Length: 340
Image (cartoon, rainbow, N blue to C red; front, side):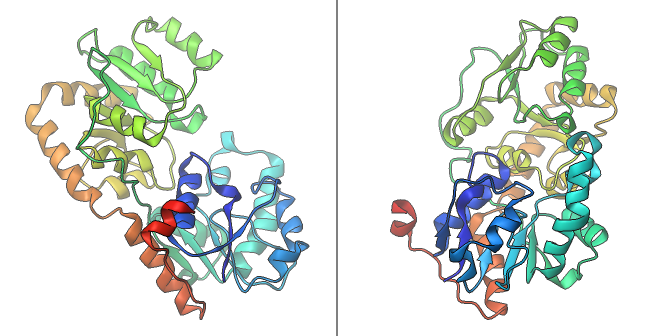
């Protein structure tokens, strides 16, 4: 059976991708207490006996056994540590140029989630394009237009994000403060507030208009999308942009960036902005508050586009490519997935 690295499972985009695969495909499970993202992990995996006896090692992330003869497939969602200096360091760049480059070259296949990421992987690692496979992302069943709506008691804009610089939260806060919309409209961020953001919020006189809601489950997150007037995702860089499709799936119009993977995923279902242009973001917010026809069109178009992004489609692409390598990959039955 194929050995699957479950250590990548978490609540972030990569972690949710890993969890869905593990729940839907019959894998032999691999787990240890070491961080899978550690630069030392390819060495640890190389001397692990369970890895060494596997027919195929499947990593839903980017690390695999470096010095083992065991064949493996990798998943690279993006290469933002290369493309964005604020997310990198000298040591990370050395790791990408040496260890990760070798892992990519020797991989049976590299799965990724968008055409944008595929092109960047090919360009940077010089991997054969036929070996880099776009499998997309799926959206969990909780995200639909039907269900409970989060009730804040006042209209709000939702930003599903984290505190990394490339998420452009500073720009969003400035655009929100400038937007000519009712004063009672709030801006909700997922995750916790930082000291730096608190200072900016204070300087922009937004203390009573911005809320950090903390870490939430998929169920609560879906409620937040459904309750929001709009969502917004003005990131500088994404390999996919899962909040776009989650918002689509809940019928909530979204503003997102016109660069990297975001325009590709959003198609014509979102209001696209230049993330470097605060005025452009502010004007887009105003537009959706004032143009009822555009609001309705984007809501309907988003629901239509979301139909393409199912875990069934992603799993089908992964399975067909694994089968093409000569390895068997069986899907779990529904009851097995629930009880695993």
